[in-house]
Image (cartoon, rainbow, N blue to C red; front, top):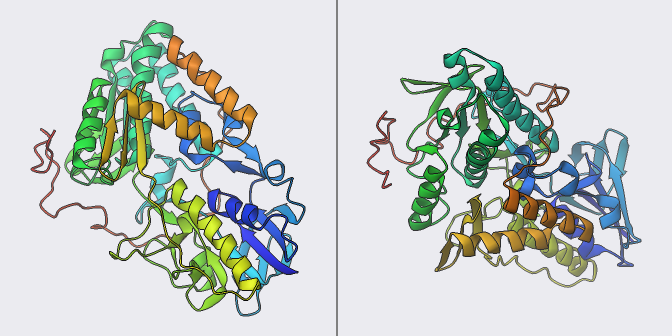
Length: 449
């Protein structure tokens, strides 16, 4: 039996294990720092009190319980010796015949790791709980203060980054302000709340068509969200952010501006791109190491047009299945198959009855896109119980405009206690156009809204 070690239990790693499950020719060991699979597309709803963490996390051992040849181990992989086919973990060493790296990605602060303390990202349950705590603390403190300047600051929310996560966070804060504040907080005027999306590119949701990007911007504006495009954040501290010569005093700053792969690829010595993603070949194996595969957010897979696949759940799902099939083909002595990605489209939600969806030339917005978004996310959740609970929570929120877990807990710690080395600044990486400069009246020449 060949021993396959999978590092990471996300969408990619989990689907590799399923593809190899109950096959007599292999035994599989899946190692993850958590003992659960996290459904990250709905993590922002945990941060915004719409769902509880337990409703989007499912134990890996339960998911893989029907596969007798799959073992799940909770641990941290420190590094790998690809020449001797050895994995070094915090609980010992392990030999492998095939290695699959699916370690995911984390937030990229572009050389300013000190900003994480003031602007948390959203990749883990702990980070979601910390964001929820900060948002709810801002409302609680604004409710009791008599200082109008302080109240205005506390009711100012800034989301750095205009991708799907940033848009979903901003829309959720906008809905919470509109439907929740006026109902439960007696000393807060919800019209004083300011919500900003600060984005360095010419428009938000750049992976979507300009038509849908414009519609998303208008939907956000209806919820009171101001979109600052062509605006680069130059400093973040405990009291707000600096954008060029402009200062925004804010009680809550959230980071959704960029991600980079985990550092294990560089630690091992594999070829990586500037974001730390491991370069893989057509069969998803690591260049120079045919017995090592990489998938999900950690992999850099180049398309014929020289672009790379985005870090999306649909990409990770397909890569995981393809890696599993190629391992079985390799064991049976058959040639591997090149990975062929099938684009299933992309979606983003702004709020109640407001979303956008795009697949090829088909573009939807509003209620139809929102219904599709709900259906797809329910379908891909693990476990029938989780699907039922999420449906009930959403139904309750839809008809009552209520939110669930509004509990404030100060004991969460969201950022790493082990500081990483500073990264070199990349000042032009997010710039859409050298001519783009921040203007207080939003006069960017590329801003069509």
